[in-house]
Amino acid sequence: MNLDALSRRLIDRFQHGMPLCAEPYRAMAEALGCSEDEVLACLQQLQAGGGLSRIGPVFEHSRAGASTLVALAVPTECLEQVAERINRFPEVNHNYLREHRYNLWFVLTGPDRTHLDRVLAEIEADTGLVPLDLPMQSAYRIDLGFPLGDLP
Image 1 (spheres, one colour):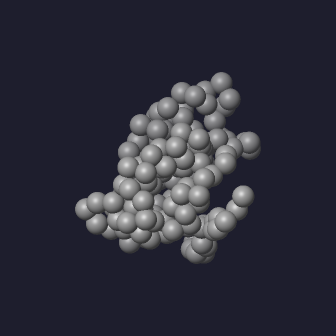
Image 2 (image 1 turned 120 degrees about the vertical axis):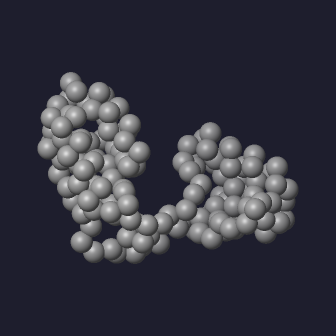
Image 3 (image 1 turned 90 degrees about the horizontal axis):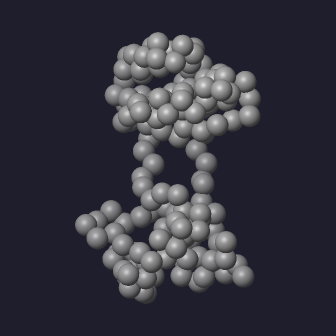
């Protein structure tokens, strides 16, 4: 994907620290010296081209409740049905396929560990598959930003 100058500046400036205000896109435009419409058009173009998947906060999960990484070993012939069923749980996010015996992975979040245990039991009862529960032991903070600067 070729990025124009505004796209590069937008990504560089707002990978971290999106304005927390009533009109964030207007604040972004002011910081970049362009119009709010230009910012919105740029974001839409990035999304349409596959360069942007979401705009939103990343929360410290341990302060907002509980979470765990979960893997399921799903028979190939049932994969679509199981994934569809898993996706119905509001506690599920980041659901994805992997090439492994444990081929369906997702993050489960909830208000506390007891709630997660209930959802895990419901998933097992619903699918007939035993979830591999992989709670985080230690957090390692990494900066996921990628400065683009003046790339061609």
